[in-house]
Length: 317
Ligand code: SER
Image 1 (cartoon, rainbow, N blue to C red):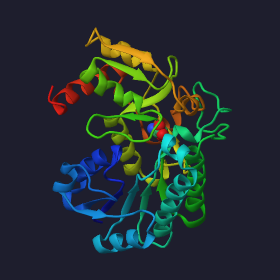
Image 2 (cartoon, protein in one colour; image 1 turned 180 degrees about the vertical axis):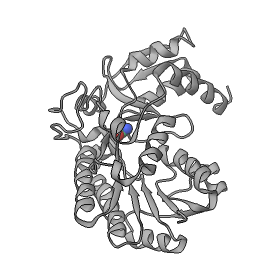
Image 3 (cartoon, rainbow, N blue to C red; image 1 turned 90 degrees about the horizontal axis):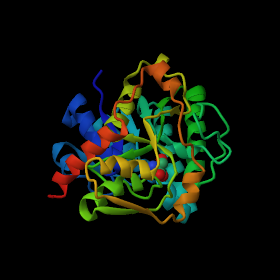
């Protein structure tokens, strides 16, 4: 059967690259990009785009009907740092939009849903090293609470209504094409821009703050890999732990210094430090590896090389 895909949040960091990847696989016309604001020119020019405010369930349903959508990738969220500043708005956006999509699947309007969770679903009482798939969670941020609750709702809709919803707990995602916004892991993107522009960077997370991270090409491969897996291999219906690399700001600096020896890093931790301190350092993703064959490709140095090469071109340096 022909698949038609709707990507909610196509202007965001992951959406931008996911749309382009899905269009290569399914054909440009069969991947409908959507967001509240215009997306990257590559996205706008290569296929259909619909303006959608995800708080408006009727509008999502209208677009699903208009294009004969069979699968929805729901990437819209207010991330950790922003949601701490507007808790109720963050909660409403993250939860209401998820219900709109899950209910479309429950009603049979679409067949498959992708919705990301995050390392933020864990909290200060979670074991930090080799964090297991199933463990104490108790998130301490608004964003984390919304992801934890969302995971349970996904699992509920799967068990109760047979909704084929799949999810990954993304680590911090690093990319050059589109920038992240409002996250606690965003320093790991900014540091590359500032290395090229200023030769130095002041990190808002302190030395030694080790967090799980991943380069965008791996995140995209994981996402489509999970969505392509046969349904009976997808045994976790809350959300899968997923790991790539774990590092602290000084490790990125060392990696950059291999290419730019004069690069300087200093530290001025802000309110985001407390958020980062509540998250795991290294994630155990053996379930994803066993169930649907996940394997990451990029290590820190390979990512650094690729980031600097592409950003140099992007910034015209
Ligand atoms: N990158 C996200 C954040 O920092 C975590 O999922 O909020």
